[in-house]
Amino acid sequence: MTAILKWVGGTTFVIALGIAALAYGVSSQAEPEAIAVPAAASIEPEGAILAKLEADARRPFTIRRVLPIEGPIKYGEWHWDDEAVPEGPLLITVDLQARTISIFRDGYEIGAAAVMLGTDEHPTPTGTFPILTKERHNVSEKYGNAPMPWTLRLTWDGIAIHGGSEVENGYASHGCVAIPDPLAAKLFEIAQKGDKVIITDGKRIGVGDPII
Image 1 (cartoon, rainbow, N blue to C red):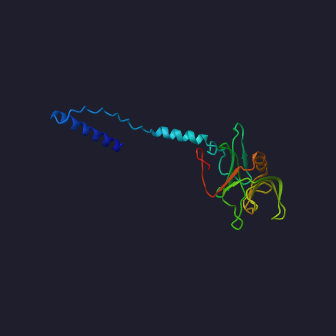
Image 2: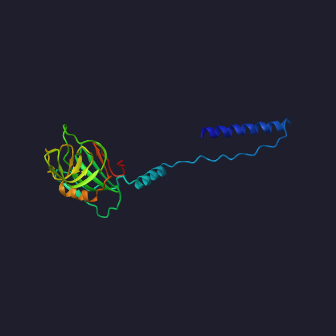
Image 3: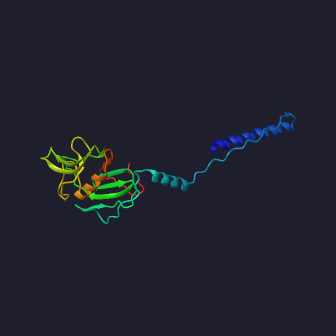
C-alpha cells in the first residue's frame, strides 16, 4: 500500500513539473496520460474464516461429530453408533492419559471405549501406525498363548489392538491396546489393512479440529 502511494505521488510531482515548464515556455511536450492504479483487494476476516471452515469440512480427518457420552467412560463401558454415518476413511485414536479409544469414519465418531494399556516396563508406544494385519483368532506366542481375538496388528514386535481381556481398573497389558470384546468385533469387521491408528499422550481434540 505504501509503495503504491509513493509511486502515485512521484508521478504527480513529474506532471506538476511538466505543467510548470509549459508555463515558462521551456517545453511544449504533451501532458502524459494518467495511469490508473488498481485498488488493493481487501480481505474480509469473515470470508477467511468461512474459507477455512469449508476447507476443514472437506478434509476426511477433521472431527465432524463426537458421540454424546455423559461423563468419563468407565472401564468395561463401550459405545457404538454408525447410523446414518456416510462411508469414508476410518481413523482410530487412542490417548494414554484419557485411556480411551475413539473410532472415526469420515470424521464422525462411531465408537468409543475405555482401554487397557501397557505399563512403564512394557509401555504402549505413541505415534501413527497403519494396521499391518487382521487376525480373527490370534494368540500371543510371546505370553503363553494368551488369547488375542480380533487382532489389529500395529507393529511387528507385538503391539496390537485386540479383545480377549477384561478391561478393568488395575489391570494392564504388555503394551497392547485391549478393548471390550463387543467393540473389538465391530471394529474388526470394518477396519482394513492400512487404516491409521494414532496413539497420543494427553492430546485433547474436539469438533472442527483436524485429527492429523
